[in-house]
Image (cartoon, rainbow over the protein chains, first blue to last red):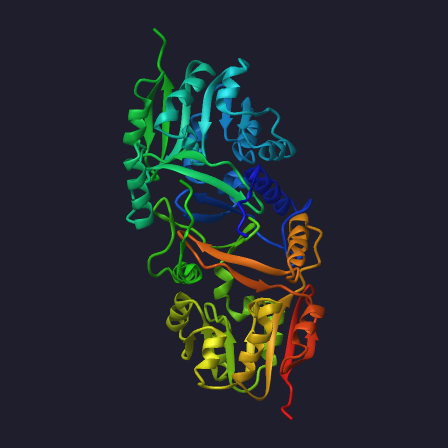
Length: 262
Length: 262
């Protein structure tokens, strides 16, 4: 009687448990009802691929971050929207530096964890919803932790970048961490990229869901694209690519600037 | 287009990758095609529950083992069959001590890893197949690493214990590591135990599969039972419970002895 997982806030439950494990406070996963077990993020791709990775890095202090996160933060200016705030590691560090930062996430559990960890300004919404609310505007948008993926795909990128433009102050910038997915000979990935292209998607437009214990998120698109693909997606939007930092290839940090309005 | 994973030797591929990560030799999972990523064992239960755990402990040296593994090995005598040999950690230590040990597993990948790590005597088979082959017989059977679960369920235990009796020398013993599953108030587990009982299974008769990347094993039954349940399963078999070591509850070490033939 193989059952599908329940649809729910799998990511939030995972972040909640990761916080409980890291602090030793509150209910947390135990093996045999007794021994703490590490919290693992499980990501399933529509083609049956599944991968697990420790969730602890979502809570890492700046000393444990990859260098490109520090380079991204050195570029921040003005009021910041941290998109996909997760457990708040970036927002907390910006707060500590005196930067005005708002954390945005679609996961209620993630938002709750950010609040408990001390992030002051939080919004539970998609970028589209936040733009529609006609609230604050921002000077810097952050998509770190590979969250360039949140632009979703070629079909979605225009709308996503338009929503950010609607939230942007003049001269705003978008700093996004991406990964070139094509630096692989793994037949599982190569076949999936080919399948994607055969149905008119970009090769790295992944269809994923997060699973945690009995829960799964809805399936969502997460775009892993090359810099060349990003250039094409950005063309025709209010944004232009101002800089590509390729020092940690295949990872890259793309800085987009809002084109001056005429 | 959500697809089911391919059925294959998911456990073996995982153990192979865990070995490659631990030795730094051979192809191994990389993040972004560059950074080594820890190998995670993902176990899915038929009710949609999924859990991940690091695979590295399959390769742990004796210094990292839980105490009950050492207590189990102190009880070993004569020729040993290590059932579910995995990556060979127990068999390698027994070999080092000069014990004659055979490693048995249904995973071709696990057997290959054991061979590469230096386990001399290996059999790729189920317990039933090994018994049917009418080969060697044994003085000690080991079911460590929670492998009491391999007796499967109430429907399967009789056959499993009969196969071991067929492989047994006079006075043989079976040393099995189990876990009492009922020491939990987790509603996900409590509901699953209730479902199991409603269909005539023991509460902890788990229906599982291992998933690793694009592969999944077939679904299999894995029995997590209390000591009282074990007593009932053993009654009417050629075995009797000689000792229960409960020092690490909810884990326990059950030592069964072959009843003297009349």
